[in-house]
Image (tube, rainbow over all chains, first blue to last red; front, side):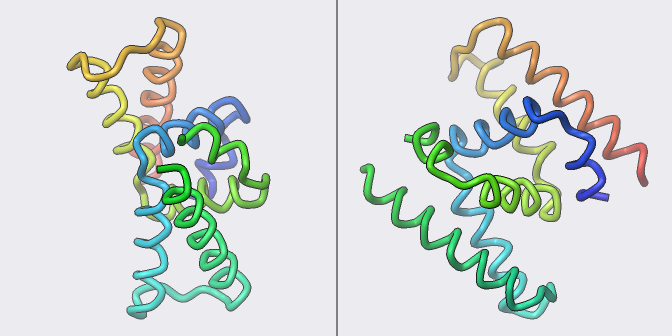
Amino acid sequence: MGKQLLQTLSHEEQILLLDILFTQQYALDLVSCELADIENGEKQVDEKRYQQLLRLYDRLLQETYDFT
Amino acid sequence: MGKQLLQTLSHEEQILLLDILFTQQYALDLVSCELADIENGEKQVDEKRYQQLLRLYDRLLQETYDFT
C-alpha cells in the first residue's frame, strides 16, 4: 500500500514530505527504526537495500552532528 | 540545518527516505505533527505552505483509508 501511495504523489508533494521530515528532525530516527526492524528479524530486505540504509544512516548521523 | 541536509541528499537517497516513510506508515503522522505545531502556534508558516500541508494531509488520509 505504501509504495503505491508514494508513486501517486507529485514531485512537489514528495519534496514537501521530505522537507517536513527534516524540519521535524525525524529522518535519522526513521532510518534507525527501519534498520532495527531488519536487524531484529521483523523485516527482510536484500543486502543491497540494507547497505543503502546503512550508508544513508551514516550520512544523516554525520551531517546531523557536524552542524551542531 | 534540515533544509541544507535535504539538499545534499542524492535523488536516490531522497526516494529511499520517502520509501521508508511509507513502509513505516509514518507519513500521515508526520504531516499531522507539522499541522499541530502550526495550529498551536509553535511554528509560523505562510498561508500557502499551510494550505499545501492541509491538501497533503487530506490526500494521505483519503488514500490510506481507501486501501484498507
